[in-house]
Length: 187
Image (cartoon, rainbow, N blue to C red; front, side):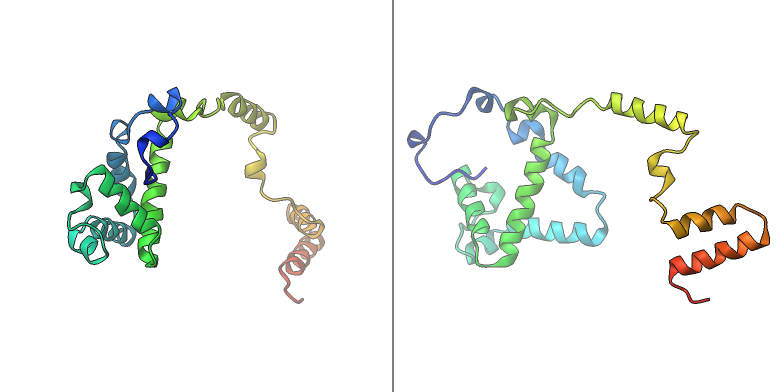
């Protein structure tokens, strides 16, 4: 997290749950980010890797007003300032890069079960009862669930479906005409 440039003495103490929160290193945010990015399509992975390389580039940092040190070699205070400069940059790619890095890291960190208690999150709901109810409804309906039944049919579509089930030529003709009407075709 980016700490404001205020002194630590001026800040209120953290609640106990936050003091016990695991660090990003304990959650292995970097390793989980690598695992998340690995299956990306090659073009997307290339763009993210280029962004991360730019972010850690000492020359780019120096040219844009930062220290002549790679991000990974900076002190925590320098890293906070580096992140802050990207977050508030006039250069869109830096702001976008900051948002990507921040959102990815936050999603990975807070999505890890080790952090649930410190964030006051009880964990994901138990969906076993919902799954059991859906399975019972499917068995009762003979294998047809609302999801497999498809969207509701309009009157012309229902007429076409019902007529298509009948082998009678007149009903078959009506089914074709109803389908053409639904599809916007002219007879």
